[in-house]
Image (cartoon, rainbow, N blue to C red; front, side, top):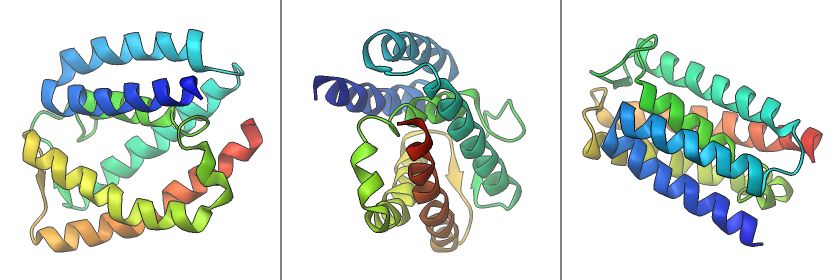
Length: 163
């Protein structure tokens, strides 16, 4: 249980560091967080495959959102998204087999959470960083809700292969 709490606390702290701190702080925090994850939380080294897969799909999703005009990052360095967002996806991916593992039994709940909390995260992030949502904002949030409602439960379902 303490590993799940550690995993959740690191992710939540990482969200703030990445969104508010920017690239340099995000890189430093993520490097330390991934080392802690590897030595104190990780159960099987195959989990790194899942982390890379989730982070890659997440970054592709965000690139699509940028190209569709749903979100804009003025500090982007990697195909429309900033480095801090790549770090955030890596940190989020570490939660799938640990603090979010319980959602594997409740995929319908993962869908609901994703549809609400995914867009909420983008909205909050846009309020705390230089990022901005597309206009009209409600359209951007609705598109994000649909995408998150599909991708997040799929990612949670995929974790069954790594347990």
